[in-house]
Image (spheres, rainbow, N blue to C red):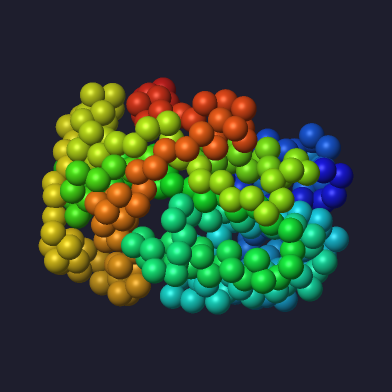
Length: 282
């Protein structure tokens, strides 16, 4: 695509990888972030300040942009409203297309409460009249080892439910492919790993590959809220943490797709292969 591509969250894991993948490949890049000092210096790119809490800064940063890779904001109590304002800013700036990073099963009442914001954002994009593609990722494989506490215990009400977790790298590769294609207008893709697994299986694989003991400890929903009370986090945030597990228990995250292979041109990364990369980084 010849137009300028804006990438939000360009200092983060996914936005940064997408920016590096596209740098010097043809399209001009506009790298967006609240702190331009954290944005990478890449060939064919410029940096622009864009704070999702300030829609005017977003509109200014997007002026002259054709395609906007919209990586959602950090979870907050008003994220849905904030992101609707970002969509309006994109319209005001003259953006033609949004590629939005959403979440599988996004719905107004989805079990994973953070996913509800994604549905509202999708609806705002649909109503805007802009061209769009939605990339709905599953939970990230990269995060699963961080579910464990200092003793290697993953606690939550996930039961025997399975999660088709995907790597952030695979999601970024799919985004880069979509951003540089004129296809996929109006399409929605669920991005998953190549298989679904339980958290008990994840703990066993982490034990074998990472070389320290891990285990999954089932909690009731009530126990999950109680065990997280010490963090003194706001209710909406704790709801999101706990519903990460209940969404798995209810089977909301177990469907496996071939979208990573279709979009990126390579197979989706298996969780065991992702874990092996962690040992190589030591």
